[in-house]
Image (cartoon, rainbow, N blue to C red; front, top):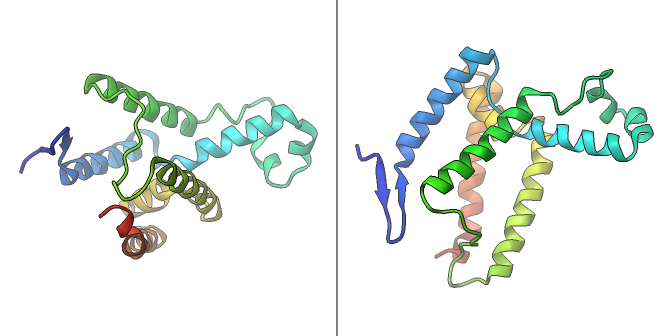
Length: 176
């Protein structure tokens, strides 16, 4: 098995090898922390902290925000926040080591940079809203759920792949 895949400009890890390593990371996370991985909780904790800083009375009276405000403990003092910061630091380190630290928007010749940026922002917003409605992101719901053979994790993973294929069919002309 080739561990690296080359295209015209870059060398990438083989996606199957990357998936295998991700699986090992999920198992190691369960072993070390007793919990799976996830990212949306860090964003939620950040939003709760910002709202509490700007409008503390509103945060305390809100049914949603008040659940995460416990005494003197900051919502930012969570393993999810540190995990998220570690992912950002790891991505930065990887970009620095591989000489890929530059701002670049990749897109098909058929669309403009503005259209691509619009789709990215819209997709990110919808993903963020969906992760809160589903009470977790793909990392927590699918990867961690599937690792413990949770029925919800299996359904989540199937739903992600099915919806990915359906949306890819509709948006493929933006890339091909």
